[in-house]
Structure formats: C-alpha cells, structure tokens
Amino acid sequence: MVDDREELEQVPWADLMADTHPEDRRRKTLYLAAGLLGAMVLGVLVARSWWSPGSPPPVAPGTTLVDDEVAAPETSLPDLSGLPLYSEADLMADPPDPGARAAVVRAEWFVTDYFTADLEPDGSADVRAALPTGAVLPDFPQDGSTGISYVEWARAFAVEPAEDGNYLVSVAFRTLAAPPGRGFSRQAVRAVSVLIGVSNGGGASVLDLPSPVPVPAGPEPQPWPEETIDPPQDVVDIAAARASAWGADPRISSAAQVDAGWRVVVTVADDAGNRWPLVVMIDG
Image (cartoon, rainbow, N blue to C red; front, side):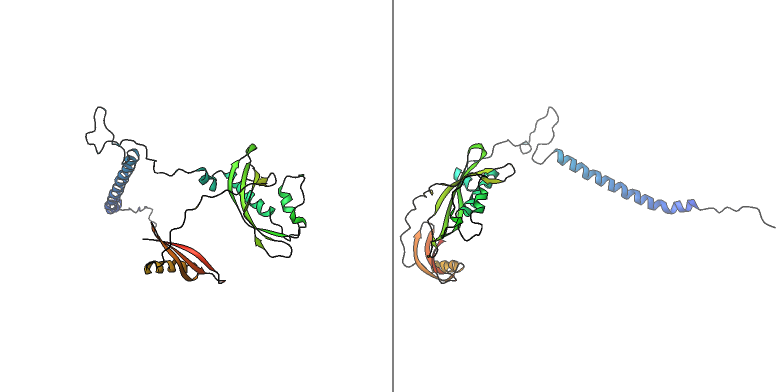
C-alpha cells in the first residue's frame, strides 16, 4: 500500500543565517569604513578647489583677519626692466610673420635658380616658369651662354612689406663662375631685391625680375690686442686641446692677453693638408 502522505524537507534557515551574520557584519563594517574614507577624500578635494594655498580662508561677515601670514598678498606687476628689447634687425633675422617667412624662402630659391647657368638641357625654363605668365623676357645666360655659373649660397638679409600685401626681399649671394677656357673662380658677393607675393595658404610667387641693391656695410672692427710671444703652458695646452677637436697638428701662431683671459691664434690642418688659422678664447 502506497503512503499518500507528503513529506516536506525543512531547510535550517536559522542555522544558515546564524553562520552568515558575522560575515555580513564584517562586510558592512568594511563598506562603511570605505565610504567614510571616500567622503573624506572628496571633501579635501572640494575644499582645495575652492580655497587654494595662496588665497585667504573664508571669513564670516563682520570679522577681520588678525594673522598677517593668512592675509591675501598684495598684487603687484612683475619687473620687466631686465628683459631684452629686440631691434628691427633682430626681428628680421627670423621674421615672425608666416607670410614674410614664405617670401624669404621663395626669394632665396629664385635667386639660386636665376643666377645658375650650367649645362641644364631645359635652359632657362625654370626661371621663366617662376615669372608671371606672358611676361616679355630677354634672353638668359642659361639659353646658350658658354660661361658657367653656380650659386654657392644665397641668404636673405632684409624683408619688408610692399604694396598689395606683397614682400620685398633683399638677398645676398655668391657665385662660382667659369668663363670659356678657364677654371672656376669665386665671384664677389652681390645683392638683389625680389618682389614676392604670398597667398593666404602660404604659397609664394615671384612677381618681377631681381633688382640690384648694395650689400650693407658692416661696422668697423676694433683692432686686435697686441700679441704676446710666450703664453703660459696651461694656456697652450688648453688651446691645443680645443683645436685638436677641429683638425690635426695644432700649432700656436700667436697669443694675447685680453680682459676675459687669453686670445690664442692656432693653425690646424684639415684632411687635404691645408692649415687654417683659428682663434681660441680662454677664460682666466
């Protein structure tokens, strides 16, 4: 006979709860401690954002600060008397205007192409392409001259604004030239000014042929100090060591005492065997 009575299993919840209560209490304690620590950190951050170390603490209305160290410092302007004042020449050496910089680059580039006449098959094509379209141009040396010319270097020494937002750039340069049947010789330094137009995007174009300008004269140099025949041995050693970093077999040519120490002229040999006079300044 089958027993129809239903047996229900009972789970000992009380025992389980008794075992887990201590663990729960420990967790709650840890969570509470972490929450309090986070609140303290947040409070410190908020306080520092509203009250920087250099600013005075908040004061209740009607009260005054007694401690001078807590009072806000007086505001004063910085002393700018020691800062250098840049001349126009200093600014022109590295013009801050992006348009002026673009004009300088294009002018140096054009002068290099313009005064170079070699055996390029295209002749003066690059020069003509750089000038305004349809301009009536004379013959150029690149189109059949028997002499050869190379621009050794070209450097802008002045740039100034011109009409219509253009720039007039003055460029000094030196060429190496070889007349027919003769070798190359270094020519005198010359200078030209070139009118350059610059677009809003920084592109630059040559607007006219170069114009001759004089090379600016420099200041008159002061006479060198009188020479001393026998400098001290430590001066000789220092000068020779510094010159050896440049070339080989340094030799003392002359030496002179100056206000800051010694001025020593040393000749140094390069890899080709040429001896070059160099000056070494030694403090002391």
